[in-house]
Image (tube, rainbow, N blue to C red):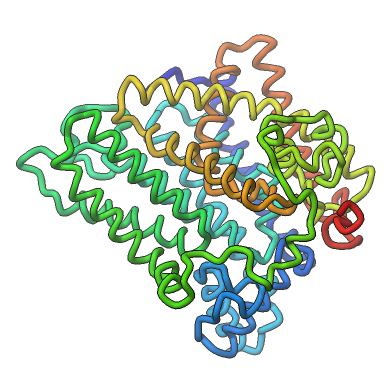
Length: 477
């Protein structure tokens, strides 16, 4: 998967890229620290309910039944980790700080996903340091990643674990050079030579499965990372004719993932008769939310309101799945972080227009990745593309079976932030590598987007939410 270095200008600018990158990282860190300390916990998605679950665990470590409260049906890793932090704070009489410490920890974990995609680019394309920096910044300045980092929520933890697993899977054979049978710039799986030692390879596969399993134990969508890695490795082995040597690493991957992540769902099935709860009475308020039904047209309709009025109760946006999702990926369409005001909507319109540039670049980069993988199934693209596909299919299935505006959230796709950043950065660098007016326009759009995200999603710089949580959906219903 080698390609042109894609330097966006002169050698002098290239030399300044690490400095500029570290400055941007410092800004991203400052944003998250300030937001975590100033954001009102109750404003977050299900934050009150999430905190209530943690409070139960502060009293007893017993795993509660799924219908004990709103959040107790969720996989438990985030809640137990938060409760462990809470008990540690209680030991030093700092229990109230839990509402700040957990978002701060989530914010710190989010940087691991940026580091992972940075390593992925450098390990697959060693001469593409500018792309590596850009990929990392695309993670850190994605609006959905910024505002979810401030919330008392499992989303960032699940996304980070999935990201680490998918990057490790993509670089599987690079981390074990002795197992590479044939030279390849970016193999995703390769079987060892007959004289090779299989134990490091099995240990690495099990470790990757463990990461994916922990993501699954944090959020149901974490299983998509495990399934994507398994599918990518299996298809690679089949296309390369290496089935026999693929069985052991695939088994190690699956076993570690299922043991760490699957026990919770097996327990549900054995105890309550279902793998994952759906339509519990404790969630009955969801059934009152608009629109209440979805059809095929809702998955192809993209209204202008996505840009002109980016709030999900707009009559045109209400049933548009991808319009609403776009407005929550690149803006706060639910208004849980930003005020429900005209000024905020205007800021959203500007950000969403600028976001068309990286979105188009993502499509270009993903298409290039698919072509690489089709020509050579041993490239690192296999796990990345599989995760993108599974995430899209899972999101469509989930939103179709839960036809309410509250289920249209860009945060549900954060598990695929690494493939997004990897392919978007590749597309953008391709556009900027030739210089000229196109490179200047793309670069200007990116700078404007990053500055806009910093201003809009830093509490107190331009906006501070003081109105009610979310949107007045009862009026729309």
